[in-house]
Length: 438
Image (cartoon, rainbow, N blue to C red; front, side):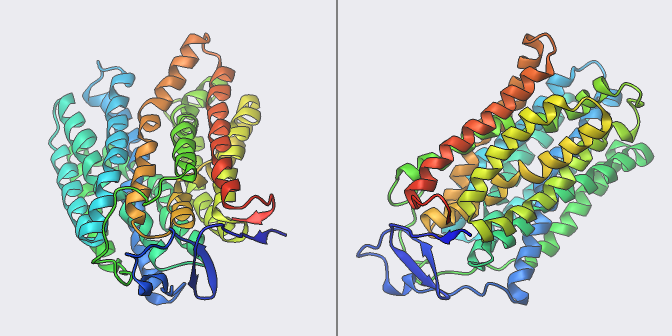
């Protein structure tokens, strides 16, 4: 049985539980050190549902992009290579993560809901404008650059908001909120695929942008920010007041691990076509491993949240990188038939994705919730290079090795394992006991 953590830092007394906080100093009001959490109740769970809806529609665009990319390649821009088209999706991911650091700071200064409203408005306008795309640079502009920046404005805010309402159930609440990215991606890709075949590209994007606008409007009214005592007058910072090794430890783990995380999501369909040639490459069945992986990622984030409440968020964060790397190296490497590929897809989706949903929980555990969205935004920023370059490097490894998939699984799995090693410094700096619940 895991023992409760003993943090060497100052602690908050919150509903009878201890949580690590930034060291006390003279300019921190005494009232700020006492703050209770609802840890449940209708209002708190409505906030989680609002965040879930944002994750369903904003964080899920990567999977929907896969459907759009296939349509572009087949119908609108058949002379453009897939590698060029994939850069538009990579640009959206990259800018979304880069913008997160700035928007996290803006949210701490001007209010979460205000920035989320701006994000929703510009995201809708970007999707709406993309409906009238006729040239490739329109796609890069509206679905790549503009949409990436617009969605990045809200990203760190709705993933951090559950931490304002929950302490004992913080991991579960955050997991439930962020699981929408996988579930929404799976559902959204099926809807967009059907719309493209029945009403065409322009009408599809008009319907899709309107669906998102309705969802964001409803979700926005569900959100509610909780202000800590003294929050409006305290000095706002772009980084924790004291930059320690724990901060670098988590940032490096995300920076390195993300390079290996995305390869299965980008390559599993191509892998399936190669090892199961009996499947019609134009059928939905060939995309089933990817769809299952994304749905599993949604449920995996719920599992991660519950597990974080049981064994501790830092332990669960480490496990995501560690076991995610092993699954790629030991399961994907030997998955040579359709059943084995499905098993790998489900396992990878269930486990490897935990670290993304646990980022705000880990940051709250290590650094407290003061300036949480800014700190979370910085950690999201740290994974932006891997979001842009991780899968392309995997493709380069595949080509350089003579189309050897083992080289890809060793590359991506090895980087996730390396990411887990960087977590260990933060883990044992917080509590040196091996079986501590941290």
